Image 1 (cartoon, rainbow, N blue to C red):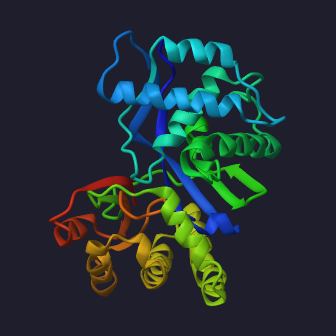
Image 2: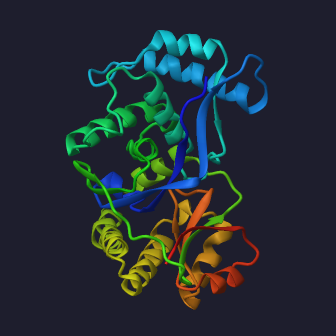
Length: 308
């Protein structure tokens, strides 16, 4: 048995803000992918995945909801027969490893599923997001459902607000000097503790004010610029966002990268922002000159996501 491929995702803009209803923009990232597979004799990662799927089955079996049901009998039989999720998506890196798994389980086992081929109205997208949020909460404690949605549809998704999401057309890539890239922190990040830190910070009025007046404003401006292809304006807004994140989200930035982050803002060689919840994994970089950024960050592993 072999399921279809599901890809990683990158939330270009909107991390944390989307919890509080700012805009967000997520794009599929086809360099990493995963699929359901089955084998009789499991070992290593495949065995770990199979055990995780057994726990996920128990979670789905006890999910008390009207909006989705699963063919649990088949899922149980498949798990017992050696079902596992084979994936090249790094875990704890903010690129949606659990999202791809959730999408694959929904695709394979959900009853009356909403398919990618039908006319995806806003109501259908919101229903999918709600289902995926419930499913992915098994992995993260609290999930927006966005990662699995992105992986399932394999389309860029624009989040206007919690109640308003739509597939987005993003400008096609150019063979220019500029790029969005991933910087590997070589540390694993855990989503749940980071989200807990954020929720604690939200109890502080000053932090809430900064979030709505600065973070959300810059994020929304970045998304508008990116979608319209306003590259020069985009970098000005990304720089502002990078500064705000460095000043207010330090616990989410691995300590070893505080100076690297600062250096980008001072030199304008590149600007960094969180990729997912932070705490490790990938850091997202934006640069008007990738060769210059590569030189400036020569001690680190970089991977291009998008070219300007």
